[in-house]
Length: 73
Image (cartoon, rainbow, N blue to C red):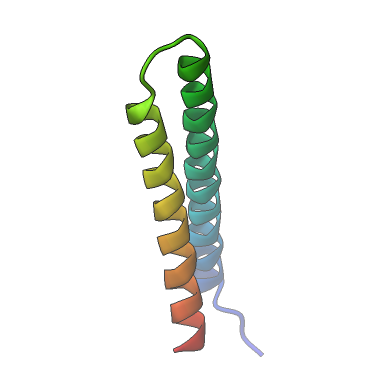
């Protein structure tokens, strides 16, 4: 049995980058929602923070759906 170390390293690298990116996007979404609550409490408009948060959550959902599509197809 021969292990292709380059392919294993490539899969590990892509998995690591994807995981960090998804966690980062989700974190930005949570920060956007918390900024929205702060702006609402101070009497300001929080449309930009809420929209940014929803975009981050939508990108996370799209990436997860694409991953599931790759696995199933």
